[in-house]
Image 1 (cartoon, rainbow, N blue to C red):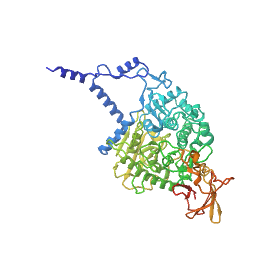
Image 2: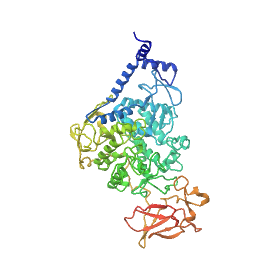
Image 3: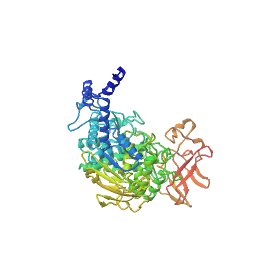
Amino acid sequence: MRSPRERRGQQQEDLLPLRVGISYTSAEAARRTLDHEIGRAATVDRVAADARREWNDQLRSVEVSGGTDDLRTTFHTALYHAFLQPNVTSDVTGAYLGSDRQIHRLERGQRAQYGNFSGWDQHRAHTRLLALLKPGIASDHAQSLLNLAKRNGGVWDRWVHVNGPTHVMTGDPSAPALAGTHAMGAEDFAVRGAFDSLVAQATTPHPDGLSDKGCPGQCEGQRPNLAEHLRLGYAPRDTCHCWGGAAETLEAAVADAALADWAGRLGRADVRAALLPRASWWRNTFTPSAGDTGHQQARGSDGGWTWPFSPSSDLGFAQGTSSTYTWMVPQDVSGLAAAMGGGDRAITRLDAFFRRPDGSWATGGDGLRYDPTNEPGIHTPWLYNALGAPWKTQETVRAMASLVYGAGPGGLPGNDDLGTMSAWYAFAALGIYPQTPSRAELLLSSPVFPRAVLHRDGAPDITITAPNASAENVHVRGAKLNGRAHDRSWLPESVVRHGGVVAVDVAATPNTAWGVRELPVDHATPAAAPVPNLPGPCAPVDGWCARDLTGQRDVDGAATADARHQGDLDGKGWSFPAEQLPAPGPQVVDGVGYRVDGTADGRTARLWRVTVPLDPDLRTTSIVLSANPNVKVLALSTAG
């Protein structure tokens, strides 16, 4: 006979001592949800078995063969993380709590209302993976965001927590998220209603856009100070009411490119014509005279740039530096390369972005180089494809996937951000990545598994084979698509729409002739003229070149001791002592000549005309602001 303790233990094994049902609408709905999800006769073992079976079904969405145990563990853990969200917020009755705190019911055909959307993070990878593998859930997620926006005064919040707005981060991520969802074939939502609503947000100023509530980090306006943005073509640092003007400009350009693409799909030529030029507005915060061959840089509402400038600074940006954000132009890579001085220069810069001076891979902690722990730059390893050097994408993607991801406790680089970093790894392991957040073309790299089959709910399978895949074989020697030779470093949208078989021949050495003849197509209006904001032409005078930098600098960083904040050289109130500036007139320091303009009353001018040696190869010189050795120098790029 069993003892009372043994009998109690058996009862605990047989029955659940506590069952929990959740509803955001009522206690009765929570009870009904509980009975539907966990019956009264449920046991711990039965619930655990059900959960195991459900997760196995989810993880079989991508069936991989071969590879090491650690690789398979890392990959399936990434899928597990990615499938943890979005989260169901409706109950078994079909009711949910809206962003207006009222109870609403699912739309016709909608299977669930979802909450939690960290848009700034997720639109770069997670929503693409969701749409690729689970188009039904992706459609319901898109409908859910539209439902929440309807009950939020038509405002699409960039970070929805459960069922309410938080305003976290920057940009308008719902635009690329939904445009990409639709492009990848997830269309079972109110497509035109969502499109019209997002276009309205992108074109009609909202009163919240003039609020500084929550700034920085949680600025209330989702298209902050849109009227000023539309007037200037960029988000001014001083009046944008946003976290970072340069970052906001770049995020908006990606969003506007997405809406323009989406408009084309829906036959809205008028909207496409209006928004497509805005996809190129990244040019309005790119200055070739900042750093080596140009950077993104903050500028004010008067058109002047915020100086002095450092590529490692986060001034004007959000959770990233200028070095990282300068590359955030996935819709116009060829245009960005041209602004940097051509594809070869862009490739050289990318090389230095990913590798330290000693040749080792950069894996974070350096403001001048790639940061795999945060989202603004996670697309960057794939940019080589569009620059005609896809073998460098193959090396870089594989290096980052192996160096900062793994099966142990340190297997994730930083915050997973609702599955976004894990989704990046899943794409990297498969050897594919969305060219832009809002389209369905997939960039190609080298898969880590000999075979992977993407079983997509309600959509044809995609099979990716790489029989020679290994840790050493990181380069693509050639590829086939549905049995035919494929010489492009990207897959067309038809693969996502109709499925197919992609066969990749990988080896240890690169094939620099593959994937270079027909590059990925950009989706922004080509520039009709060079990037604006270059310094004006210089006038030769006795072997020297007088270059007028007016308009390139709006603040010289100097102020008197009793008004130090007026110099504001870094946006934080610091300034150089005006009393120690050189007197107006010609100056020579270490053999370098320059002239400091004066004002009518004989004082040093706020804006300078700088004279530098006339040398076509000269790109940078330094001008000492004071004879005082403790005063910093200001680096001026003359742009040759």
